[in-house]
Image 1 (cartoon, one colour):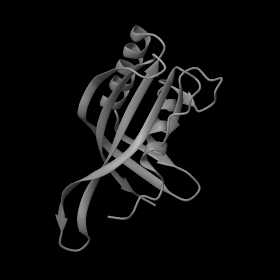
Image 2 (cartoon, helix red, strand yellow):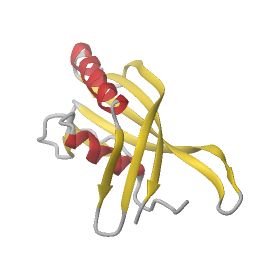
Image 3 (cartoon, helix red, strand yellow):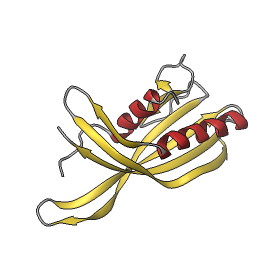
Amino acid sequence: MSVIWTPVARIIRAYLVEQGVGAEYSENAEWPIATAASPEKPTDLITIFDEAAIKRGRTVDSGVLEDPVVLIEIRSRRHEEGLYKAKEVQEAMDSLSFWQWADASETVKIATARRARGIFPLGRDENNNWKFNLEYTLVIQSIT
C-alpha cells in the first residue's frame, strides 16, 4: 500500500464540494469547508479534521494496512440549519462509493466511507453557535 501524501481532509472537502454540500473556503461563501482548523468566520461552517488511522490488518509484503479517519464538524448560528447541514453531509458521505480524486502530484481512489459515528450534537460553543459532528473511516488507496 503506497502512502497518501495529501491530507485526507482536503480530499473529502473536494468530494463534498463536488456533491454541492459546501464550498471551497472563503469567508463570503455559503457553507464554506475548512480543513485542519475552524476559522472564526463565517459562523455557518463545515470543518474537516484528519484523525488517527484505524489499523485494518497486516500483509506479508507491505506491513500494516490502515484506514484513515476524518471528523467532520458543522457549526451554525441556528440549530435547525446546522442539523439540516449535518444531515446533508451524512447523506453525501454515506453514498461515497468508488470516487476518484487527483491533483498534480497524486491520484487516489476512495472505495467507501464507513460511518464510525453518526450526527452527534455538541450543543453550543463559547460564541453561542450550535455544533454537530460526524466521524467516518475511509477505505482509500493511492493509485498514482
